[in-house]
Length: 302
Image (cartoon, rainbow, N blue to C red; front, top):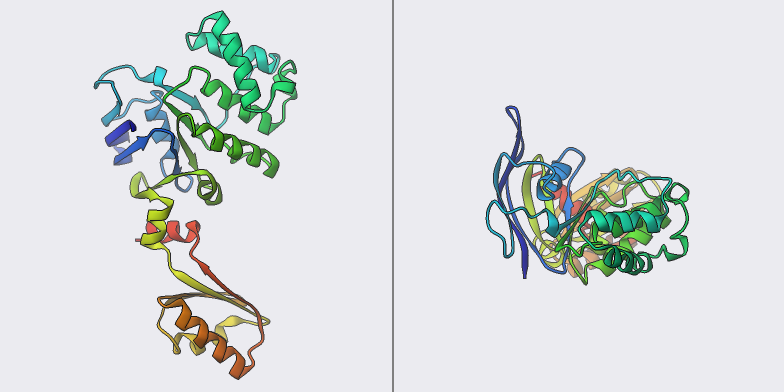
């Protein structure tokens, strides 16, 4: 079921067009990544969706609402750099956030306890937030974003500033949350998007240049790849393989070559034959598929 439909969304700063007419639809109980480099327009897009910034043009239509309706109560939002009251405890902060969201005192207390357990900081509920780790603060921030049971949770770069342990905690939490609500999060870290999301929106220079599920993107853009690593500079060996089989393209980086091929089985046989016959100083032979990062680079370079 559709949660929100975005049509021809634009944002101008004076004469500079930052978001250039993007269209997409977000579905319930799905985790969607808004993927793009720094400066692509991710935060601007999320701020318009969350009601913090007015679009220059376009529509943001939530299921069951009409154009012009106030939809902010349907959204939970966590900014890229959340600020907390360090003198409050985690429990006090969530109860306060619940009251601000319109919950009664009783419901706010009950919901706070549920969320402290859900996000995994129940044991630290009476500790001052100033003593929390970065990962704990992010989980607390996500808890405040969902305290009023929104239809859509918007997270701006939720793991970019965390260490590996904090990143793992938050990604696992997002995986649990998407069973209950729609999640839209921005990131420039492609591995995070690949790990937790169901769909990806590629944003580049204010334009939505590609979108789809992971499977759809792989089917459309991914290629079979053979990676060779040599003991010495790899450039001298490239022609031995490109002349042998139909190689679509290749990339050389010091002592490594990546070949993108149409027929992986034919290429594998041909490559191994050349390596054996010429006794090449090979360190590694690996067959793989193009990564999400390579798909992204291919899309934005069109």
